[in-house]
Image 1 (cartoon, protein in one colour):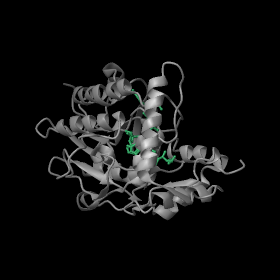
Image 2 (cartoon, rainbow, N blue to C red):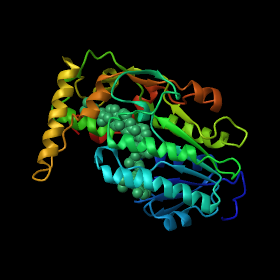
Image 3 (spheres, helix red, strand yellow):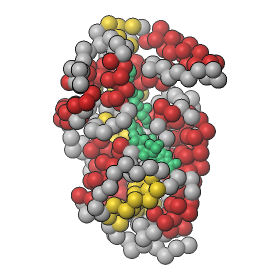
Image 4 (cartoon, rainbow, N blue to C red):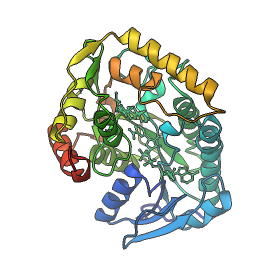
Length: 345
Ligand SMILES: NC(=O)C1=CN([C@@H]2O[C@H](COP(=O)(O)OP(=O)(O)OC[C@H]3O[C@@H](n4cnc5c(N)ncnc54)[C@H](OP(=O)(O)O)[C@@H]3O)[C@@H](O)[C@H]2O)C=CC1
Ligand SMILES: CC(C)CCC[C@@H](C)[C@H]1CC[C@H]2C3=C(CC[C@]12C)[C@@]1(C)CCC(=O)C[C@@H]1CC3
């Protein structure tokens, strides 16, 4: 076992720090006086105060050099859900997270903050104001979510006060903001291909979308409250904007803000879900001969047509969490950050 790093040291590591959330987290940590050891499979930027370590988190030796003299680790790396690659999710999110935990123990790290997902309790049916005591999904919506469940269990079970290793999991939902490679680009791509004319279901389903800076704020609060005498050790926390919005109103605000028309015509949920399932089956059967990625996957249809919003009361009570950017402001900042995705650009 390595020597423990001085508690209270402001040197931390961000695994997945080159990604969308990771980079916002790194930027805020620097603002708050931390120095950052960034570990990622790719380098996307350089900043003073950040030491970049390139490597795969399944490689313990590579991790160990990034964790030297670090007391606090944020683990926010994952393959993208859209990669739809079961073996990759298992290797990185499950085996890789075991490696991260072992490397933290070997390096004498004291605190590990995992970015989990509120979807670990979502089975494709309505969740209204879901609290952290909901059971994990027995039938998760996809392989990505299945491995996020296993990953969260591993990290929370690794919390060990006698060993001085404390863990906590943050469960954000529908993260959006500048530089997001997923939500806004997928939406705009669908709009440009004329696929955003329809509302799935009656359009009244409420959903959480969380501005990235609120997610970052939740992570830093969790790290700074993680002490042996605090109630947060080994627990998961929902972090949302605390402003559930109709899924289709959110999509419309982003689309209209970027100059596209809002969806108007309604289609029954079960019809679209059935079609998406059929399409998914067809792409699976045909995948040896052709590669085709449908826009409307069963997972996206379930997310677009059901209620899924979560209570962040526990985070408010234990972490003093309160969103720092409202949904309206978050949408305005996001829309302004994508001039290249505007209609006609
Ligand atoms: N975006 C969202 O709406 C939500 C995200 N989350 C969680 O938040 C976290 C961050 O997500 P987000 O920022 O959107 O994702 P990104 O894909 O933008 O960031 C993840 C980063 O991890 C890197 N990475 C992937 N595999 C490895 C590996 N084996 N070793 C080292 N680095 C690796 C990625 O590299 P590369 O790009 O090359 O794969 C990328 O730089 C994830 O854990 C995700 O599950 C939770 C809820 C909602
Ligand atoms: C084509 C449209 C019907 C939908 C376009 C937007 C979607 C790409 C996004 C709407 C909800 C998002 C979401 C995620 C990814 C992007 C969306 C499907 C996650 C699956 C990302 C990873 C998670 O942990 C959960 C997220 C839930 C919401």
